[in-house]
Every structure is written in C-alpha cells, then in structure tokens.
Image (cartoon, rainbow, N blue to C red):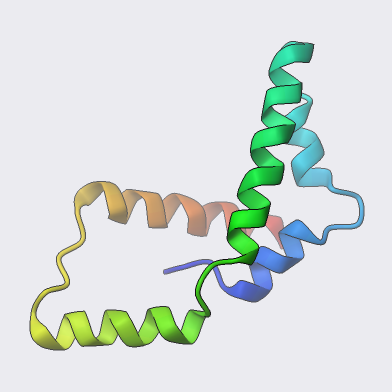
Amino acid sequence: MRISDAEVKKIINDPGQMIVQAIVEVGEEHVRQQDQQMVNALSAEVLHMADREDVIEELRAQIASGQYNPSGEEIVDAMLRRAIADNVK
C-alpha cells in the first residue's frame, strides 16, 4: 500500500521537522550535512510526484491487462514505506 499524499505532506510539513531532524542528527557533521541535502532533495521530488489518482489508474490498467508484476524488491519497499508512515501518526 502506497503512502497517501496526505501522509507525505504531513511528514514534510511537520512544524517541528522531528523526522527530518532525527535523520539529520545521525552520523558525523559532514554526513549530517549530506543527509540534510538529500532529505531536502527528496522532499522536493515527493512534492512533484504524480497525483495519487493518476498512479491508481495506471496500476488498474496494468492489473487489468495482466502486466502488473511487481518484483520482490518493490513489494518490500512498499511494505517498509507503509510501516514508516504508520509510525509517523
């Protein structure tokens, strides 16, 4: 299950930036700076992702045509993202 747009925006717009801060505080100073840059870049990418409805429609078409065959890696990735999102609430 994909993390909803609302959950992503909640994470990104967290006024305390608790999640981002927790990620950034790990490691040495130069690593933290690189991590912050990566988090900022990924946040910008997430904001420019396709609308959820477009993604759902594309997946429905793939399923209907028998062309939807996610790899094990894609399934694990989705499961991990879902677990992270569930713990953010």
